[in-house]
Image (cartoon, rainbow, N blue to C red; front, side, top):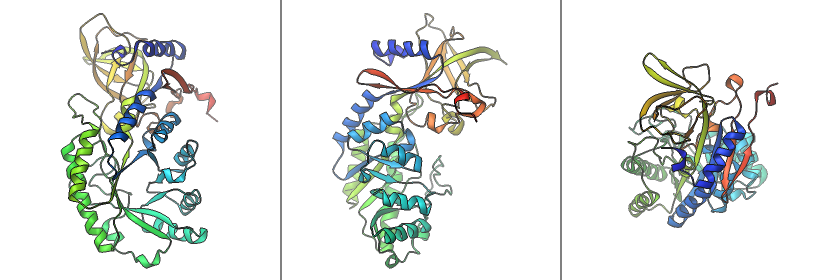
Length: 406
């Protein structure tokens, strides 16, 4: 399949124009299609569900603006993400803050900025929130992030392994709630699994977590208003992965809501919102056979899309142009970095693909460029473009190493 099967004729022509002009790898985000997805999602939302966009998935301003325009809040996990989001909205009630490493100074900044809710991830953070609120004469809403011991496979967020995220239930049980007069505990946050591709597994994870958190709220004598289930909704990266609709997710949550008397559930969606609407383009710079295996070497690699090195799972790959041959060959695709880690995957592509031809990796709207190692070996930083109102806009130009090296 080529890119002509993905975009309209006009957009396909515009993409080819970018390729002719740029000569370097780039990302393209289809904001028009993303906006339609956001409208569909918000229209299906029940009143007990609040959505947040996980900024870490892709913090580019064109995506953040689309999210805010559809009345979805944003989850930030660093000062940099906070500063980026504040360019799109100054309304702190539309922002929540997660992340295991919040210093006392950072927490004070969040409270001064009027951030709607802080997800507290340690006993120290809880004390610092309370101290800052006292000094600023404010009261802060928080969730207690809880790391549960559940017997499921490990993921990048930890799964059942020990991670820095949150406190375990025994840690929270040491609290003396009378010591925290300037804090309003709204409930709990739990998020230990990412890119869950099975609805059945998602249901099991959520139900098990909810039951443990309900019991913890009773032990702590906390009125449970919110359970933030984090994200974890998966998108397919290969043909054998299950793809489920948002309607199926809502049906699952309706079933859970009917069983458990929790006023509000939260979801933090990053990959599920942004992933399908991003594309990464890079040129083939060499082609060879090594020990009987067909290889393509591309200009860009894990310096722009490092997910394959982190997870062992590739972004889907297609050719930019159509080929006359119907014969396909299995190619191993490698980037240009001087490390065997720069392996992008194995794909069935046209056998007569040539040096100078372009590949496009799909599902690259989330955990793409900002999840990578762009400075290694001083290659170009990838440009970024957005399709907005049926036109392609450039968000960032290609940057060469001499523009950032000191």
